[in-house]
Image 1: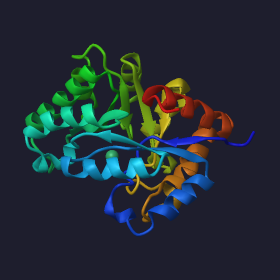
Image 2: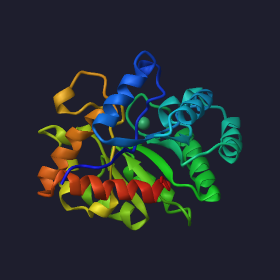
Image 3: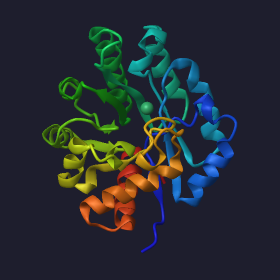
Image 4: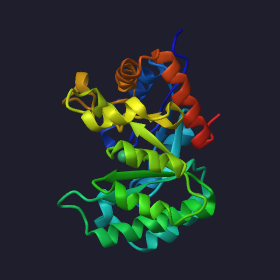
Length: 257
Ligand SMILES: [Zn+2]
């Protein structure tokens, strides 16, 4: 069976690194069946750029949020602004928001305050939430449990199989990118081997996190195929079946036609 449609559920195509050849990047995505691309928001000053891009290209779908990596760029007033921006612009999800507990990141308390404020906005607007979680899965689980109507995705999932099970029970999808194509990717491999495919999403996280074949290069949506192939081999299911299921999952979560 040929692959019909794929969704890149997390791709920063708005970043300047794509300014010179964005049309060609999208052309290659199209040739590789990637017909929908979800663009997460990172900081307030970038939202209008994402909005403009997504009106120009119908295959791009906008999210708006405040990324934990750029906490020093955010202001408390950006939360109110986010609420208003979502009210007035087509939005498929709130995010990218979350927690990054690696050394050198902003203090946990500040991150947590921006994160939970955005969960609250998603909860109020009945929108899914796009979560960035690095070394923070346990805290993310505790935070999302505080809200009754939340669902969403954990992008570039790096937690354990048990934590994935808890997140799936809470209504979350597990999104997997190029990291699974590396030989040493034991944890995410064990998660993907056993988790229900009805909760799986595929992403590239372009321009970051290229797969093994494209190591060292700028990542782009067309490379999603390599992650798909790795997962199909792991699960012993055809790539077209994985494509169909993950596309259904993305359409359901993000209400994409
Ligand atoms: Zn991201």
